[in-house]
Image 1 (cartoon, rainbow, N blue to C red):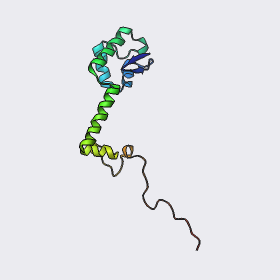
Image 2 (spheres, one colour):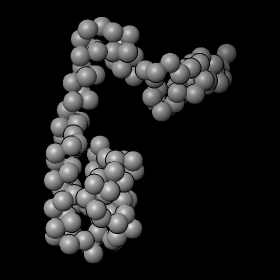
Image 3 (cartoon, helix red, strand yellow):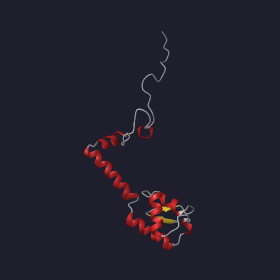
Image 4 (tube, rainbow, N blue to C red):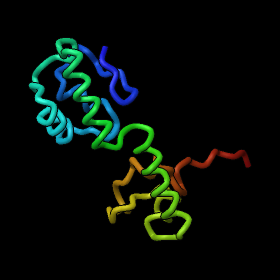
Length: 128
């Protein structure tokens, strides 16, 4: 089992896919890292030599912000927007989309489950 940036990457997968399990590394960065480390992207993680693993580790540590550091950076950026009172910060506070998407319909991922307003329940019959 290879451990890179504090993450145990799956040993049965190809290296180019396995690297994307690290927060902050997507398919593009993964292929760039492998090219710099001279590792074939289709190699399985379990077949990597110690030297190849070490090269990948060094490149990631040197050139990329990943995992906890990146999450802290993103959280601080959002907190700064909220503190300054920027429009994007207000949208983050309200739990609404921040990048100009429409909210009259859609936006369910950010807004959460729809809550019915008015006339949702039939009135109970009362005896008179």
